Length: 162
Image 1 (cartoon, rainbow, N blue to C red):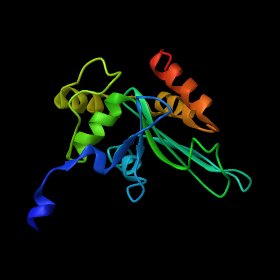
Image 2 (image 1 turned 90 degrees about the horizontal axis):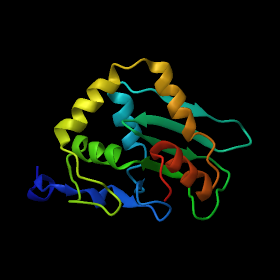
Image 3 (image 1 turned 60 degrees about the horizontal axis):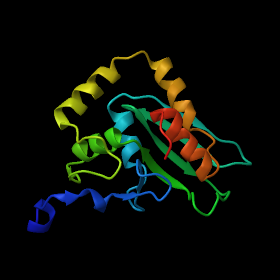
Image 4 (image 1 turned 120 degrees about the horizontal axis):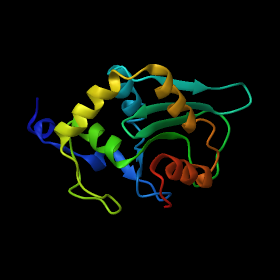
């Protein structure tokens, strides 16, 4: 390993804050699918939907939020491009921990910075939950067509207006 590879990577190497909401983090090109792979790898269920006339939609529940992925030949609203997104501060921080990324100190809109050990304990608890209620929650993230629907999802998940 070179000296550069040993340096801790920053969260901004993988994620970009969304302009849609402060608690949404877009996954940078070249890293797409990494968040979903991690969640599925630890045993969390993913729901998908696609047909020949629409985009491919994928949603995975992670802690109190979701990991969303949309791809396909059909365009979205210009402000909501295809790709992978993490919805929620706690899922974002857990993914930073699991990817060994240096997280931000405190983010605008975040109540407090959780301890990584607490997030890992919460994940362990979530993995043992019944699968069907997790799938039902993940289904909330399917078929989002534009920014307003994404903002409504944030409101539903976190009971707040952004």
